[in-house]
Image (cartoon, rainbow, N blue to C red; front, side):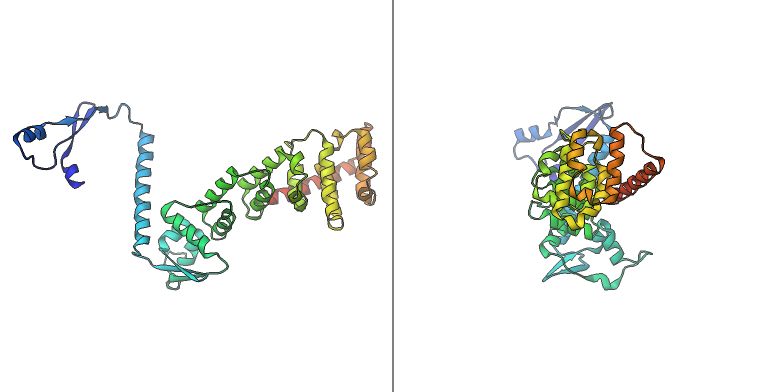
Length: 340
Protein backbone atom coordinates (compact mmCIF):
# COMPACT_ATOMS: atom_id res chain seq x y z
CA UNK A 1 0.00 0.00 0.00
CA UNK A 2 2.89 2.34 0.87
CA UNK A 3 4.45 1.80 -2.55
CA UNK A 4 1.22 2.65 -4.25
CA UNK A 5 0.89 5.92 -2.34
CA UNK A 6 4.53 6.79 -3.04
CA UNK A 7 3.83 6.34 -6.71
CA UNK A 8 0.71 8.47 -6.73
CA UNK A 9 0.43 12.19 -7.26
CA UNK A 10 -2.02 15.04 -7.63
CA UNK A 11 -1.84 17.39 -10.61
CA UNK A 12 -3.88 20.58 -10.30
CA UNK A 13 -4.32 23.30 -12.93
CA UNK A 14 -6.78 26.02 -12.20
CA UNK A 15 -9.93 24.42 -10.90
CA UNK A 16 -9.20 21.00 -12.41
CA UNK A 17 -7.52 18.25 -10.44
CA UNK A 18 -6.24 14.94 -11.89
CA UNK A 19 -4.94 11.94 -9.98
CA UNK A 20 -2.09 10.10 -11.69
CA UNK A 21 -0.46 6.83 -10.79
CA UNK A 22 3.05 5.77 -11.82
CA UNK A 23 4.61 2.35 -11.64
CA UNK A 24 5.67 1.91 -7.98
CA UNK A 25 8.44 -0.62 -8.76
CA UNK A 26 11.45 -0.34 -11.18
CA UNK A 27 10.53 -1.43 -14.71
CA UNK A 28 12.43 -4.48 -16.02
CA UNK A 29 12.62 -3.75 -19.77
CA UNK A 30 13.12 -0.69 -21.94
CA UNK A 31 9.54 -0.77 -23.19
CA UNK A 32 8.27 -1.19 -19.67
CA UNK A 33 10.39 1.73 -18.49
CA UNK A 34 8.91 3.89 -21.23
CA UNK A 35 5.43 2.84 -20.20
CA UNK A 36 6.20 3.43 -16.54
CA UNK A 37 7.35 6.95 -17.31
CA UNK A 38 3.98 7.81 -18.78
CA UNK A 39 1.36 9.39 -16.60
CA UNK A 40 -2.13 7.86 -16.53
CA UNK A 41 -4.58 10.57 -15.49
CA UNK A 42 -8.01 9.68 -14.12
CA UNK A 43 -11.06 11.68 -15.27
CA UNK A 44 -10.64 15.20 -13.83
CA UNK A 45 -13.21 16.62 -11.40
CA UNK A 46 -13.69 20.24 -10.33
CA UNK A 47 -12.52 20.92 -6.78
CA UNK A 48 -14.61 23.72 -5.38
CA UNK A 49 -17.39 24.18 -7.91
CA UNK A 50 -19.15 20.88 -7.14
CA UNK A 51 -17.89 20.17 -3.61
CA UNK A 52 -20.67 20.33 -1.02
CA UNK A 53 -19.13 21.47 2.31
CA UNK A 54 -21.84 19.77 4.33
CA UNK A 55 -21.39 16.50 2.44
CA UNK A 56 -17.61 16.72 2.87
CA UNK A 57 -18.04 17.29 6.61
CA UNK A 58 -20.30 14.24 6.91
CA UNK A 59 -17.85 12.11 4.91
CA UNK A 60 -14.96 13.15 7.13
CA UNK A 61 -16.99 12.48 10.24
CA UNK A 62 -18.03 9.05 8.99
CA UNK A 63 -14.44 8.23 8.03
CA UNK A 64 -13.10 9.25 11.44
CA UNK A 65 -15.91 7.40 13.25
CA UNK A 66 -15.17 4.24 11.29
CA UNK A 67 -11.45 4.44 12.04
CA UNK A 68 -12.14 5.04 15.72
CA UNK A 69 -14.64 2.20 15.91
CA UNK A 70 -12.25 -0.22 14.21
CA UNK A 71 -9.43 0.85 16.50
CA UNK A 72 -11.49 0.36 19.65
CA UNK A 73 -12.66 -3.04 18.49
CA UNK A 74 -9.07 -4.07 17.82
CA UNK A 75 -7.94 -2.90 21.27
CA UNK A 76 -10.65 -4.97 22.94
CA UNK A 77 -10.01 -8.07 20.83
CA UNK A 78 -6.28 -7.89 21.56
CA UNK A 79 -6.88 -7.10 25.25
CA UNK A 80 -4.83 -3.90 25.05
CA UNK A 81 -5.21 -1.07 27.59
CA UNK A 82 -8.07 -2.98 29.23
CA UNK A 83 -8.54 -1.45 32.69
CA UNK A 84 -11.85 -2.87 33.88
CA UNK A 85 -13.67 -6.16 34.19
CA UNK A 86 -17.44 -6.48 34.51
CA UNK A 87 -18.38 -9.53 36.55
CA UNK A 88 -21.73 -10.71 35.19
CA UNK A 89 -22.93 -14.04 36.50
CA UNK A 90 -20.22 -16.61 35.86
CA UNK A 91 -18.49 -14.49 33.21
CA UNK A 92 -15.84 -11.77 33.30
CA UNK A 93 -16.24 -9.20 30.52
CA UNK A 94 -13.17 -7.02 29.83
CA UNK A 95 -13.66 -3.42 28.77
CA UNK A 96 -12.19 0.07 28.94
CA UNK A 97 -13.56 2.42 31.56
CA UNK A 98 -13.20 5.38 29.23
CA UNK A 99 -15.42 3.73 26.60
CA UNK A 100 -18.07 2.65 29.10
CA UNK A 101 -18.09 6.10 30.73
CA UNK A 102 -18.38 7.84 27.35
CA UNK A 103 -21.40 5.72 26.40
CA UNK A 104 -23.22 5.63 29.73
CA UNK A 105 -23.87 8.19 32.50
CA UNK A 106 -24.32 5.22 34.84
CA UNK A 107 -20.77 3.96 34.30
CA UNK A 108 -19.36 7.49 34.21
CA UNK A 109 -20.60 8.02 37.74
CA UNK A 110 -19.39 4.56 38.72
CA UNK A 111 -15.84 5.04 37.45
CA UNK A 112 -15.12 8.71 38.12
CA UNK A 113 -15.64 11.30 40.85
CA UNK A 114 -17.44 14.58 40.18
CA UNK A 115 -14.11 16.35 39.60
CA UNK A 116 -13.03 13.71 37.04
CA UNK A 117 -10.69 11.61 39.19
CA UNK A 118 -10.65 7.86 38.64
CA UNK A 119 -11.96 5.56 41.35
CA UNK A 120 -9.48 2.75 41.94
CA UNK A 121 -12.12 0.33 43.23
CA UNK A 122 -13.89 0.54 39.88
CA UNK A 123 -11.44 -1.79 38.12
CA UNK A 124 -13.71 -4.74 38.82
CA UNK A 125 -17.46 -4.18 38.85
CA UNK A 126 -20.07 -6.76 39.81
CA UNK A 127 -23.39 -6.41 37.99
CA UNK A 128 -26.21 -8.25 39.70
CA UNK A 129 -29.31 -9.71 38.03
CA UNK A 130 -28.02 -9.31 34.49
CA UNK A 131 -27.86 -11.97 31.80
CA UNK A 132 -24.18 -12.36 30.79
CA UNK A 133 -24.99 -12.93 27.11
CA UNK A 134 -27.11 -9.77 26.99
CA UNK A 135 -24.41 -7.64 28.62
CA UNK A 136 -21.79 -9.11 26.29
CA UNK A 137 -23.93 -8.11 23.29
CA UNK A 138 -24.20 -4.56 24.59
CA UNK A 139 -20.46 -4.19 25.24
CA UNK A 140 -19.72 -5.58 21.79
CA UNK A 141 -22.08 -3.00 20.25
CA UNK A 142 -20.32 -0.12 22.02
CA UNK A 143 -17.06 -1.18 20.35
CA UNK A 144 -18.30 -2.31 16.95
CA UNK A 145 -21.71 -0.64 16.34
CA UNK A 146 -23.02 -4.11 15.51
CA UNK A 147 -25.73 -5.99 17.40
CA UNK A 148 -27.84 -8.99 16.47
CA UNK A 149 -31.30 -8.09 17.73
CA UNK A 150 -34.22 -10.48 17.28
CA UNK A 151 -37.70 -10.95 18.71
CA UNK A 152 -36.36 -13.22 21.45
CA UNK A 153 -33.67 -10.93 22.87
CA UNK A 154 -34.75 -7.35 22.10
CA UNK A 155 -36.76 -6.84 25.31
CA UNK A 156 -33.89 -8.10 27.47
CA UNK A 157 -31.38 -5.86 25.68
CA UNK A 158 -33.84 -2.95 25.94
CA UNK A 159 -34.28 -3.43 29.70
CA UNK A 160 -30.52 -3.70 30.38
CA UNK A 161 -29.76 -0.64 28.22
CA UNK A 162 -32.41 1.26 30.16
CA UNK A 163 -31.05 0.13 33.53
CA UNK A 164 -27.47 1.13 32.74
CA UNK A 165 -28.43 4.30 30.84
CA UNK A 166 -26.92 3.44 27.46
CA UNK A 167 -28.88 5.67 25.03
CA UNK A 168 -27.33 4.34 21.81
CA UNK A 169 -28.45 0.76 22.54
CA UNK A 170 -31.76 2.04 23.90
CA UNK A 171 -32.45 3.86 20.62
CA UNK A 172 -31.52 0.83 18.51
CA UNK A 173 -34.04 -1.26 20.48
CA UNK A 174 -36.76 1.39 20.12
CA UNK A 175 -36.24 1.52 16.35
CA UNK A 176 -36.40 -2.27 16.14
CA UNK A 177 -39.62 -2.49 18.16
CA UNK A 178 -41.27 0.30 16.18
CA UNK A 179 -40.57 -1.53 12.93
CA UNK A 180 -41.87 -4.78 14.42
CA UNK A 181 -45.23 -3.44 15.66
CA UNK A 182 -48.02 -5.89 14.84
CA UNK A 183 -51.51 -6.77 16.12
CA UNK A 184 -49.95 -9.60 18.13
CA UNK A 185 -47.41 -7.52 20.04
CA UNK A 186 -48.54 -3.87 20.00
CA UNK A 187 -50.26 -4.00 23.42
CA UNK A 188 -47.20 -5.60 25.02
CA UNK A 189 -44.90 -3.04 23.36
CA UNK A 190 -47.17 -0.21 24.52
CA UNK A 191 -46.91 -1.43 28.12
CA UNK A 192 -43.15 -1.93 27.76
CA UNK A 193 -42.75 1.65 26.56
CA UNK A 194 -44.60 2.90 29.64
CA UNK A 195 -42.72 0.65 32.08
CA UNK A 196 -39.33 1.76 30.70
CA UNK A 197 -40.46 5.39 30.49
CA UNK A 198 -39.95 5.64 26.73
CA UNK A 199 -42.62 8.05 25.39
CA UNK A 200 -41.50 7.62 21.78
CA UNK A 201 -42.17 3.87 21.83
CA UNK A 202 -45.32 4.15 23.93
CA UNK A 203 -46.83 6.79 21.65
CA UNK A 204 -46.01 4.78 18.50
CA UNK A 205 -47.66 1.67 19.96
CA UNK A 206 -50.62 3.63 21.31
CA UNK A 207 -51.31 5.21 17.92
CA UNK A 208 -51.00 1.78 16.29
CA UNK A 209 -53.59 0.42 18.76
CA UNK A 210 -55.89 3.41 18.30
CA UNK A 211 -55.88 2.87 14.53
CA UNK A 212 -56.94 -0.80 14.97
CA UNK A 213 -59.01 -0.45 18.12
CA UNK A 214 -62.05 -2.48 17.08
CA UNK A 215 -59.94 -5.59 16.45
CA UNK A 216 -57.44 -5.17 19.29
CA UNK A 217 -60.09 -4.46 21.93
CA UNK A 218 -61.17 -8.10 21.55
CA UNK A 219 -57.69 -9.43 22.36
CA UNK A 220 -56.95 -11.11 25.69
CA UNK A 221 -54.06 -8.70 26.35
CA UNK A 222 -56.49 -5.78 26.15
CA UNK A 223 -58.21 -7.00 29.33
CA UNK A 224 -54.86 -6.97 31.16
CA UNK A 225 -54.24 -3.25 30.66
CA UNK A 226 -53.97 -1.09 33.76
CA UNK A 227 -56.48 1.73 34.11
CA UNK A 228 -54.06 4.52 33.12
CA UNK A 229 -52.94 2.47 30.10
CA UNK A 230 -56.52 1.94 28.95
CA UNK A 231 -57.49 5.59 29.46
CA UNK A 232 -54.48 6.75 27.44
CA UNK A 233 -55.89 4.76 24.50
CA UNK A 234 -59.65 5.32 24.65
CA UNK A 235 -59.33 9.05 25.30
CA UNK A 236 -57.61 9.58 21.94
CA UNK A 237 -59.44 11.78 19.44
CA UNK A 238 -57.87 9.63 16.71
CA UNK A 239 -59.48 6.41 17.99
CA UNK A 240 -60.57 4.58 14.84
CA UNK A 241 -64.07 3.21 15.52
CA UNK A 242 -67.25 3.10 13.48
CA UNK A 243 -69.42 3.76 16.54
CA UNK A 244 -68.81 5.04 20.06
CA UNK A 245 -70.73 2.01 21.30
CA UNK A 246 -67.60 -0.05 20.59
CA UNK A 247 -65.58 2.07 23.03
CA UNK A 248 -68.19 1.89 25.80
CA UNK A 249 -68.65 -1.87 25.45
CA UNK A 250 -64.89 -2.44 25.44
CA UNK A 251 -64.61 -0.41 28.62
CA UNK A 252 -67.36 -2.34 30.40
CA UNK A 253 -65.87 -5.66 29.29
CA UNK A 254 -62.55 -4.54 30.78
CA UNK A 255 -64.28 -3.56 34.04
CA UNK A 256 -66.13 -6.87 34.34
CA UNK A 257 -62.86 -8.77 33.93
CA UNK A 258 -61.98 -7.61 37.47
CA UNK A 259 -65.18 -5.99 38.68
CA UNK A 260 -64.21 -5.56 42.32
CA UNK A 261 -61.00 -3.65 41.57
CA UNK A 262 -61.95 -1.82 38.38
CA UNK A 263 -65.45 -0.56 39.12
CA UNK A 264 -63.91 2.30 41.11
CA UNK A 265 -62.06 3.44 37.95
CA UNK A 266 -65.30 4.01 36.06
CA UNK A 267 -65.63 7.51 37.47
CA UNK A 268 -62.53 8.63 35.57
CA UNK A 269 -63.26 6.32 32.63
CA UNK A 270 -66.57 8.10 31.99
CA UNK A 271 -64.65 11.20 30.94
CA UNK A 272 -62.96 9.20 28.16
CA UNK A 273 -66.25 8.20 26.48
CA UNK A 274 -68.01 10.54 24.01
CA UNK A 275 -71.50 9.79 25.31
CA UNK A 276 -73.10 12.42 23.10
CA UNK A 277 -72.05 10.29 20.11
CA UNK A 278 -74.19 7.40 21.38
CA UNK A 279 -77.78 7.05 20.17
CA UNK A 280 -80.07 8.26 22.96
CA UNK A 281 -81.98 4.98 23.02
CA UNK A 282 -78.73 3.00 23.35
CA UNK A 283 -77.69 5.25 26.23
CA UNK A 284 -80.96 4.64 28.07
CA UNK A 285 -80.88 0.87 27.61
CA UNK A 286 -77.16 0.03 27.87
CA UNK A 287 -75.61 2.79 29.97
CA UNK A 288 -78.31 4.00 32.33
CA UNK A 289 -79.51 0.47 33.12
CA UNK A 290 -76.08 -1.16 33.52
CA UNK A 291 -75.93 -2.85 36.94
CA UNK A 292 -72.40 -1.61 37.76
CA UNK A 293 -73.27 1.96 36.84
CA UNK A 294 -76.60 1.89 38.67
CA UNK A 295 -74.83 0.76 41.86
CA UNK A 296 -72.63 3.87 41.96
CA UNK A 297 -74.39 7.12 43.03
CA UNK A 298 -71.59 9.28 41.59
CA UNK A 299 -71.91 7.62 38.21
CA UNK A 300 -75.67 8.09 38.24
CA UNK A 301 -75.12 11.82 38.77
CA UNK A 302 -73.03 11.82 35.62
CA UNK A 303 -75.70 9.83 33.82
CA UNK A 304 -78.26 12.48 34.74
CA UNK A 305 -76.00 15.26 33.43
CA UNK A 306 -75.65 13.39 30.13
CA UNK A 307 -79.42 12.86 29.94
CA UNK A 308 -79.92 16.58 30.47
CA UNK A 309 -77.46 17.25 27.66
CA UNK A 310 -79.48 14.97 25.36
CA UNK A 311 -82.53 17.04 26.32
CA UNK A 312 -80.72 20.29 25.55
CA UNK A 313 -80.30 21.42 29.17
CA UNK A 314 -77.12 23.13 30.26
CA UNK A 315 -75.32 21.59 33.27
CA UNK A 316 -75.23 23.50 36.53
CA UNK A 317 -72.08 25.53 37.17
CA UNK A 318 -71.19 23.41 40.20
CA UNK A 319 -71.45 20.17 38.22
CA UNK A 320 -69.51 21.68 35.34
CA UNK A 321 -66.71 22.77 37.67
CA UNK A 322 -66.51 19.30 39.23
CA UNK A 323 -66.28 17.72 35.78
CA UNK A 324 -63.47 20.07 34.77
CA UNK A 325 -61.56 19.16 37.93
CA UNK A 326 -61.98 15.46 37.13
CA UNK A 327 -60.78 16.03 33.58
CA UNK A 328 -57.71 17.86 34.88
CA UNK A 329 -56.99 14.96 37.25
CA UNK A 330 -57.34 12.49 34.40
CA UNK A 331 -55.04 14.50 32.14
CA UNK A 332 -52.40 14.63 34.88
CA UNK A 333 -52.60 10.85 35.28
CA UNK A 334 -52.20 10.30 31.55
CA UNK A 335 -49.30 12.75 31.43
CA UNK A 336 -47.52 10.66 34.05
CA UNK A 337 -47.52 7.60 31.80
CA UNK A 338 -46.59 9.15 28.44
CA UNK A 339 -45.99 12.39 26.62
CA UNK A 340 -48.56 13.20 23.91
